[in-house]
Length: 321
Image 1: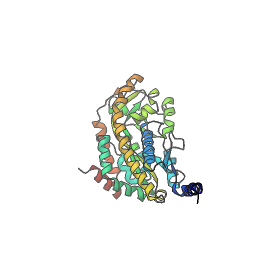
Image 2: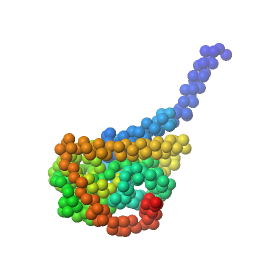
Image 3: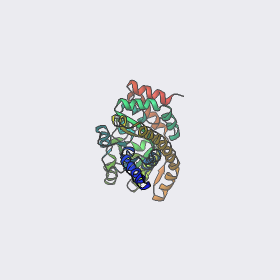
Image 4: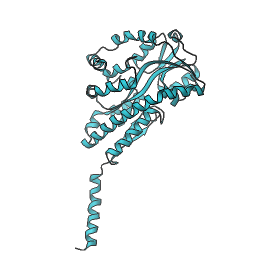
């Protein structure tokens, strides 16, 4: 047989085998934060890592800014299988994975790194909770430390009394801000800028990253550093969809998620002070209220809001020395 024939047969064999070897996976992942905000950068890092680990056989298609719906719609899309993956605030996800309500509790962790250490140490327990609700936990990003943005300066907890403060659609957040004396007003994140601009609400709790990324300082030029919540943003997919993937893709997804999580948390922590410093150039008035009254007002929530055995077990694991 001639070399030309042998070469042609080899090429034909390679072309015939290629489709069987090159199984491509494109996972659509959506969130409501602005493009290039810290959470979005975390997903970009995850995409980069996933492509590296699979030699390009798997990737993420990222939809930021609420393009595919609000957070509740994204979570429901994952549950129904119409969306591969979502990254949302824990405060919305904990309505579906009730054990995760622990992460909605005020003043639970003093820093992003402290929270990250506890999450990593208790990953198996958290994964079990997610699996029990039909989800696969891929990563737990940080959304930063939550403060208070308003239309007038807040110097003390007394200045919060009677203010209409936007909260997430989460019962713990509502009760926390009621305990601080505010009139909590749950609404979707996508509606917040307009609500602040029109005076529908007087302010909102928010992280410095969101305050910057969504340019809320244009309509709420006062920022009080109360640090009431150390916010997480879990990345999840449907458990059944995850289980249907080849083992090598599962492994690559989990490794990429874990590594991107650690990268993103550190990035958020590194950004916190520079962002706060940058607000002054935008004309923002920054105040530093005494947080002890806020902390004391939060204490009853630990009894009233953590009621199930799963919540109590996770709380004890996360707060154990």
